[in-house]
Amino acid sequence: MIPYRDENPSPETPYVTYMLIAANVIVFLWQIAGGPDRFQYLIYEYGYIPALFLDNPSANFYRLFTSMFMHGGWLHLIGNMLYLYIFGDNVEAAYGKVQYLIFYLISGLAADLLHTVMFPTSMIPAVGASGAISGVLGAYMIFYPEANILTLVFIYFYVVVERIPAKYYIGFWFLWQLIPALIGERTGVAYWAHIGGFIAGVVMSLPLRDRVRMYRQGRYPEYWWWGYTW
Image (cartoon, rainbow, N blue to C red; front, side, top):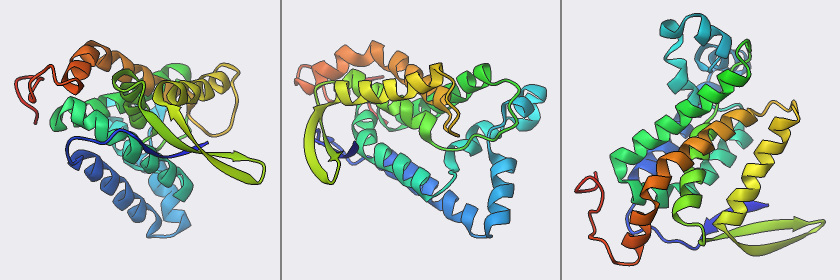
């Protein structure tokens, strides 16, 4: 199943989401600019490596952030940016721009934290925006559970479009991460990082759920959080 848009128009232009997409694309172009050897070097130099971080947190602190904007290939980048484009605008509208950026980064840090807990001795670099975007998915499910996600469903040689409520689509996505993580599947995907980011997104968004729903129903003033949106 591949989502391609949601039926949940954003009330404002999602400048921060666009900025994050642009930053990820620019960084990836920088990664591939010097050829395969340099690409591999950059992954190890700026990717998040749990064992190195635990050995010397201050010297490797930068990796927590640089790894969020790097990707392992075109499909990795395109898949992540598609999800960020579909789900990020509404979460940005709910949080406000500066708060959303902080939320995004905290989700990415939570992803690294759980990945480190599960693999403290790993020397394999983890890269990608998936952890932070998992937090966005968690927030979207809390704020807009009934919003329809238009999804391409592939059935053998046929492709059909289905409207799937966000709570079911994202719930299935979460199980898709949780099951292989629990059985220890080794695919090169940092499942526990996705789970960590998702849980952080849910936890941070739950206290705001009722306010977002009241705002969508017109029962709250336009600038409803922290006095104004940033």
